[in-house]
Image (cartoon, rainbow, N blue to C red; front, side, top):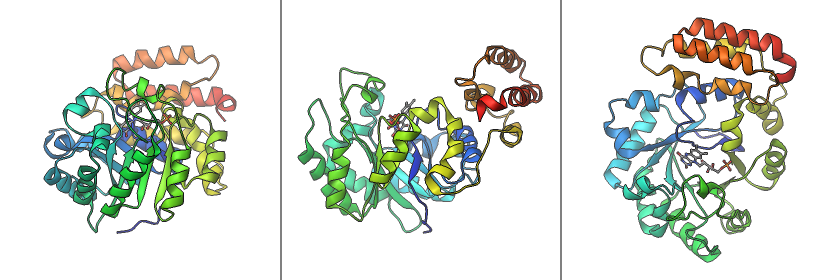
Length: 327
Ligand SMILES: Cc1cc2nc3c(=O)[nH]c(=O)nc-3n(C[C@H](O)[C@H](O)[C@H](O)COP(=O)(O)O)c2cc1C
């Protein structure tokens, strides 16, 4: 198993967002960022007819496949599949609080049963691929470090060496998944404290990192950081990551090549995938660029016509006109 990757800067798994297309754009913008798929339920991974579309990895490594599930035999197979699709890591979701996920007996509710989580991680583990977990710091309204520590004490017996921690509790009833990303308070100290106990385990901090400055400062204190919504809203800031976090001084600017590389990839997909899913990552180029409304309107008109060539040309024009705003 090859794993010399640095997880100093990771993009969080986000359902509906970290699609193969978004990951392609992220990879064009940053060679070093560690990427994640969306959470994929183990049953979908095993039986979905669209499986290839969901889990495609076009050599966008380093990248982890995140699975949601708790059935041991399924998880063993999922790990094999992740390896066969050239993923570097298989990650168990122990953080999603949604009702549907609880019904399927996976996600954050698994924190109630640390022995089951250990068994799941053991099922995922094999010599071909790295295994990791993404969890919360606890359940319910009250913070309880002892609960978190005992949970980690058990799961590390599975032999995993990488843990991503969304540093807030999950509240399993009464609030939505979205509210579960803001209402439970953040407590980064849980991650700091557990690291002092398990110095050899890589703990990646996640939750509420909403600027590159904050990301840079926190990356000095933790093994690595993981960002979700900042990248969801503005993926183009990834152009600065290799320089800021990996001392790669090949400064990347937003130029025509980013557009042509991206369209070269999606051009072959238009017959098998929805044009909205293909284009949604790159539409974020308009984020906070002044006077881009007209471009947006034109792009949406062209999307209805389904003509990728004319959409690509619009993006190229946009770069020409807004280069200084973008870089
Ligand atoms: C739209 C959306 C979808 C998400 N889907 C997943 C998911 O599939 N798996 C997961 O572990 N977390 C998921 N999350 C949570 C993020 O991975 C991350 O833990 C959370 O957003 C906190 O990080 P942030 O404050 O940097 O956004 C999702 C978050 C968002 C905004």
